[in-house]
Image (cartoon, rainbow, N blue to C red; front, side):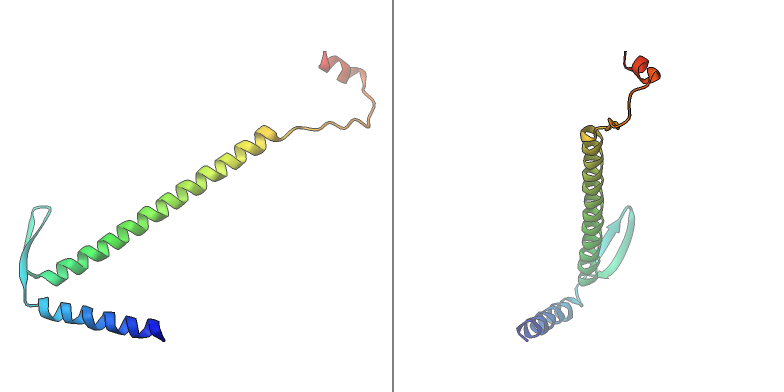
Length: 101
């Protein structure tokens, strides 16, 4: 119940900030393309969303990279520690004696 109250209060504060700043406009330059009379709050919200998307893709990329490294390390360790065991219950033949020499 406490989380709901805090969330509602945060939404009310955010709504007040948006309403009070909706009348302020600015000029926005994006790679040489100039946008005029853009509300400041729109620029802030778009910047925030782009930051979230960038952070999420960076997090996913790093997680996949770490997973790949761990998988390669595990594969390398299993190859280096894996010893091929021979069946010693069978008697050696002449061919197998020659291959060991």
